[in-house]
Length: 502
Image (cartoon, rainbow, N blue to C red; front, side, top):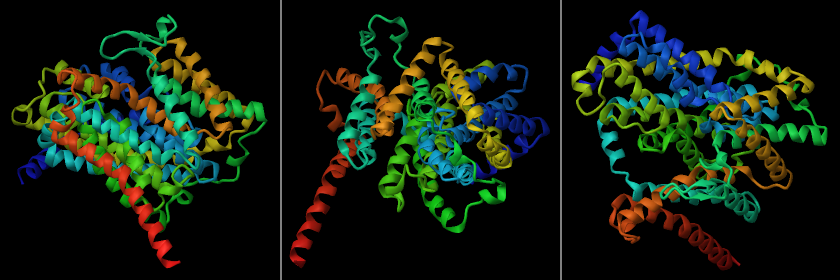
């Protein structure tokens, strides 16, 4: 009850003209930045932080928060329309979103992404409202051992994306893990597979790899196979034509709600962030959703899982930030820097000493979430005009976006070369029916898995018993065993029943 009263007081702060304008401006800028490949929420918040220097603390953080979760909305736009994820969390959105665009359902894909983002964001904010301190304490319980087993659990889910021939999926997964090992060892700093190239000491950056494999590879396909974008020409897209029917809404709701809850809890974990939340929620949906077997072929349920999770995770990241002063992601670290710049010290006493600030921020997130979906839906007719651009013009536009997005990741020309190389690899994989999703998932998870695994062994003197001593880690291990054993048992039971009937 105290939280509800405090929230209402927060609305009185958030609804002041200055704060309302800040929320709207932040959401708009976040959507624009999110739709631009390669920039992402981290760079977006960093670049726009100076705009808030002369603002009141609550006004400044409201704008930065709007940029953060507005970015989650915007990242889906280029992923769906051009197959170029605007940010890392939108990678899974591209799998079904672009497939729907190829089926002349780009408007519906955009609408589904916006609805799921709104649902996931709302769930995350509600959980944050009532459970922020509790969530922060749960996040603190996840040390190296717990994070190792969580990432191993995510690795186990790669098997659900292998496709019809598991050997192709396994090769892609192995290749993704090998790419992730390039650079310095996260524990002892030794260099690996760099060939003496200093540009590889910090490893391959995710964004150029993704942009190359998704966006640049389709340009290569167009030039080599003389294909075009004619599949985009038959759709007259309007808001009305993009509306989801009853069946599609019924498919989105359960997936968005489940992914919203799961994404919020993953967003709380240190180092997890929206990207891993999006991957894990998509894998979970593929496993248990009614349309799971069609994920990756162009279904709204797949979009719902990804978008709801990354928006909810963005809200969840504020729990440890405000309650403990611990940023769960790079973007949250920028927000922490903003708070300290204004003389505020996040931690257990922040809600007690700066209640107006905290609750004003949380209330603004409710408002910002509504503003984001209104802006996102309003621009659908304008965005979908991209689909009317002739192939001769579209291809250089995509090439430009790929180059700019890859360069913007680190302001380094070497990343452009990585993007081009990844584009040819992506073309080869698609041509030979190797799935890209397992490769990207392994690429994302391997570095953190290696880091947390090494830390776990060092903490426990080289013994693996730490994974049994820790209850949360033991729980995840048990889940992994069940995931491996249960399908085999079910298959055996079905075989016995089939034999009995004969």
